[in-house]
Image (cartoon, rainbow over all chains, first blue to last red; front, side, top):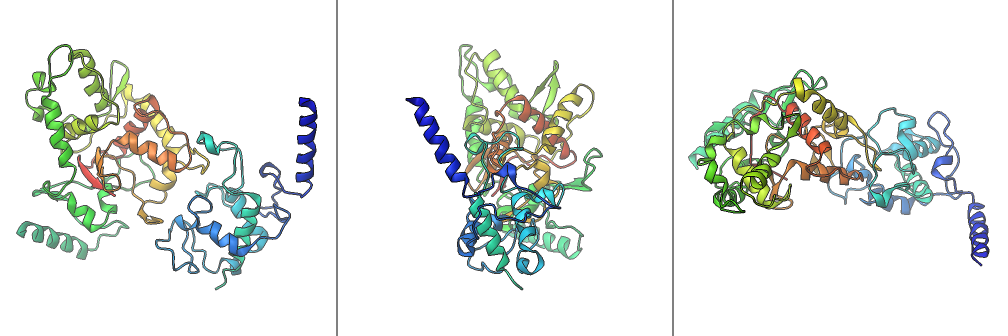
Length: 149
Length: 278
């Protein structure tokens, strides 16, 4: 009986993975770039804007200023300003930086938003998890591309 | 009132002198006594030229709270510490004051802690609890609890204005090295080390917070955020949780070693206990 359930679960899983979501450990970098969508779908810039400002998700304003969000008080200044970032970087570069900025900027303070291992002593509830989902990364990248000077 | 005006004009003079630093140039004086809030960095802190107390990174309002003991909210807890110091507890019928008749005799202790005794790294909390269990026959206090911070604030206050002078060599060396390793070790889902914020980025804003060097010369510190005294280990725990790391145990070997290393990074600053922060 239990075997049947296992088989059922496995087939459900393989159906899901057929949608072509790339797991954190399978992301392919080329010189810091990540060419393909992680979720297999296009990003939603409006959703990305929300993920960007959400303190428990992107929390990007902790470290970056962004003129597109004057309604949000207190923009951090640890990282470079993101105003006009869509003019300065291509989609594949932005995706690479959001997934794991250390691939392009060695030793950076910026957290990798799409890795699920390789960090030490995580709090239990975050162990084995990435900060953002594949689709949330795509949404944030789509949003960043709308930030033009 | 006149005194405050005097302090303000002193601050303005300092400002117009135009010291080249990212930090503010005001001067901390409490009841006329100047507290050294900047100093040449110790030689081992090779990435810093100057060490700054966290006081420099706070707003003018928060800074001024620390300049007058009647306005400093930490003194409510220091007063509790005085009561606790005199309180008889345990099987031996003793209070702290039974042996330590005058708390002022603790002058000079805070600047030297943590230190090594019989091969073990010892913090002020360890000394207090050792007295409670060994001499008073009383229960130890919770390491970061309110009774402990009240009494460590009272004892630390006796050395206010003295220069931090924590030993880093000899039998302290292995603990110092452990603390240094922890300071530079990235942890948590956000994969950050103490140094990423407090050495590489002090002086800049992380959202609404002005990043300091993480100096601990003012601990236990009164935080406006939680309206109580906070021990250094409680602050370490908070920082680690913020970067989504499983904190080390308060009072444990790792945090004691980190406390030693951080205290030594502030060698040359004055003891500021009890300080006021955000």
